[in-house]
Image 1 (cartoon, helix red, strand yellow):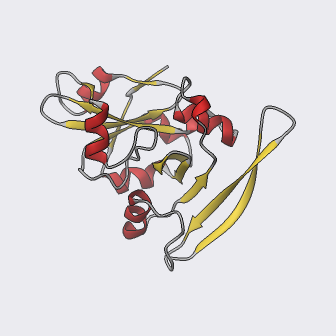
Image 2: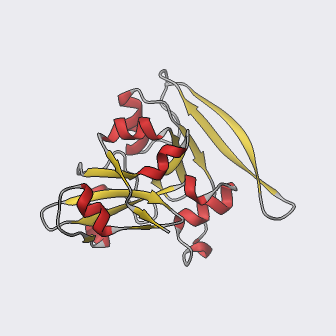
Length: 190
């Protein structure tokens, strides 16, 4: 897979701007920032781009996704976080904007369960193969049923974690749904 790298300048709140490395994957060479998430997309032949930024632990009160939105100068409603929930019968993935919260009742209803609670963080890391703040919906160790918040459909591209902190994947919501065999529902709250 050949990777074409370009640098994009994102405006910041101050007079400064930030430059990040953006790569667009094609089908000929494997790129340098390979994670299980990017490998899964490459194998499926799904087009995506990667965006990297320098992760800082100073943003932990706001959350990893808010840090990404601020550093990339993007609307937090276009950056989505991946959360693992437990219905009692199975664990399921909910993907919602970083600016909102996962509605556990709505997620449970979307998968036909009576209730859902957040999965234990250690179990989430073990089952996904990713660290907290870097959990990607793609390339997880254990395949989980996945629900994408329907707000994603308003955008031609959203960002999800690429499998590590400071590394995101830009992908169309339809391509993400295809890659994950996911469904959509109103599972985000603000």
